Length: 184
Image 1 (cartoon, rainbow, N blue to C red):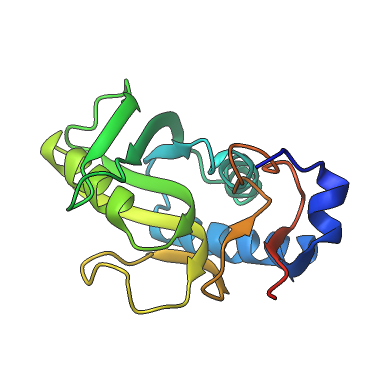
Image 2: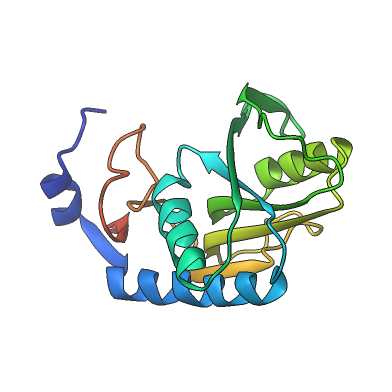
């Protein structure tokens, strides 16, 4: 597939979530996190690459609410050739998670394999609590039953989405809204 320009992608797509709606969702998530972690400094682990735009804006929204966090990140993905969703790690957090509360920050909760594996790894490292903040949640029945977003943003239809950190072949992440290709 040839690479689409931002303009071509938008022209061939349906706008699902505009920027004001994203900003409102980030504010609501920040309010909930600031309330739940008042007086604490949790480890704020962004799951790269998709979470980058969301996690940056969420961190700033937390600061506006007087909530500090300790930044870290990880890069892991589900190896699609393996049944059961084995994780492939490119980078693990360098912060000690032992005895700490952790917030995993991701762009989307789809089936939940990556978030399940990462959450389990954090607990194995001694985290006392691991919560999940996601900008988007796909509406379908394929999500693992033990994976849920503690801090969900907006709900999306079960379509292939891109923009605001989500990609098509590692491109189109910089769009300031969330789109899906038009359905035939």
